[in-house]
Image (cartoon, rainbow, N blue to C red; front, top):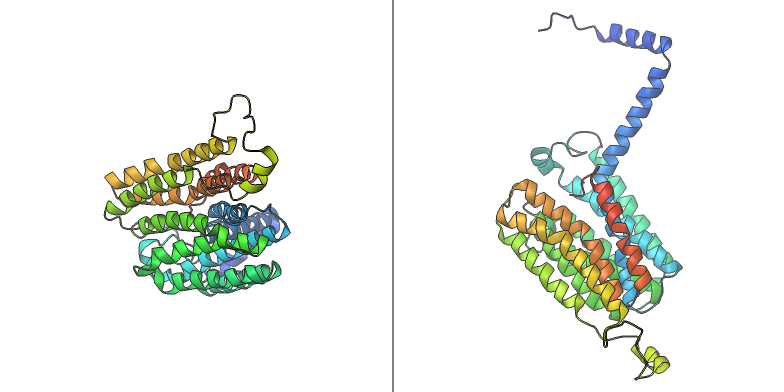
Length: 346
């Protein structure tokens, strides 16, 4: 069409070799571009910005037990990260045929990563996650094993069934319990926090089921209502599971700090502030998706819901009197938002 004759492959290779001999920098530049291309493909496959929503699970579970984080908590976080990324790789492997139609730009249907490579990565990451959990102790492995099973069951079968959102919510709840089990060997005190975090994840997952083609406004409306309900629950003053020791030290008639409101502890202010951040992260995108459940607005709502996991984790941690840990978790939110501008979390 252009009038230019296509150069035969042998001639083309020879021309490229000659150009490379004249300019050796061309090979280095091409190799660097190829490596960057592969890194970008893996970042998209694993949805790396979403990783910032993972450490808060184990930390919130630890805070719920009243114990400070320790070396086993770090192992629990590392295990969670591996199992989370295993689920991401397995998700795209299982959905490769659907993505070829709905999302041909994804790493597998576009050919940037082979399906067998993604499946191998999912298996390796799962094995690494279980190994790290075992290093944290038997109680941690006892939680990590059903967590891994839930992740695989969701990706390979439950995702497209009514049980899909429930399974994903259960996975988040188990991830929180993993932190409690690794740190103290107990999970009972962390069950309420796990239920709250799991409920949030269930709502987000329900919305995500229609992010490719759009759908009913009921899902984002229900997620909006869930956000309001969770905010009410987490800001309600909980029983102090460490109150006995504090009561004995300060006495029942201890003088409040200057400027403090009677009956309201400083941690309550932090809990309220973090809960407000949680609402701010989700309310507007959910509301827009309710008014117009189109794919772009629904995807934006799902991304907001995933990122809102971080302030919710921080709220649960502050509610359990883990002030410093809550602030640490909250600091992950702007980092996740920054990297989400480069790689989508959905």
